[in-house]
Length: 214
Image (cartoon, rainbow, N blue to C red; front, side, top):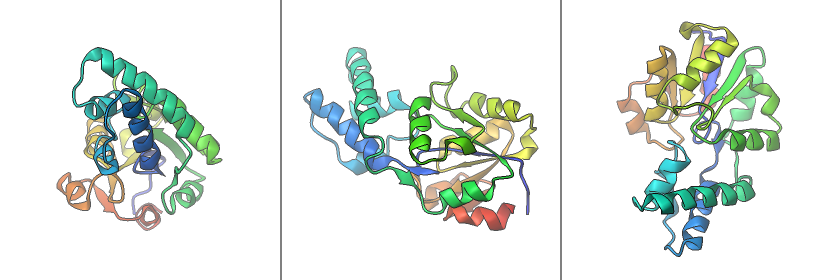
């Protein structure tokens, strides 16, 4: 058992199931721009690297002007629909409560204000010492800037920190910051994809953290 003092969680695909509301908002943007909607599963594959990446993929590499408009429209639509279907993944609320004596943080590429709004709607904002979004610093994940910031705020060294995430972005971020990483298999990547990344631990249900880390 390896106790950690700070647990830094990715958000979409790790703590919170946001994919339906994201896909719906992307298709509202495409509709407003006179484009055909995309299958939800296609949009799910674009999630995890921030809004600009999401909309670049959804627009299939359209011009900068279209991209700027699409990003602006997405922010508008998603703000209106971010809690239509969104909720914690199974057992995530329990894990947050279980680690009440630890420091918790979110390190995500999602705009910070959306993370704040969702956690407030789920009555869980106060449990997180730090919230880092994709717009919090100059660089997003997999750059370790945000993860290093939450370590600095907590006054902890890399060996005291565990990153929990569902993608290659999270594994790379953790390694770049020198921290251990626990992958989850229920998010945006398959178990096979996560296994290929060789995280320090890989779990199918977040409740397994109790057995691994106390």
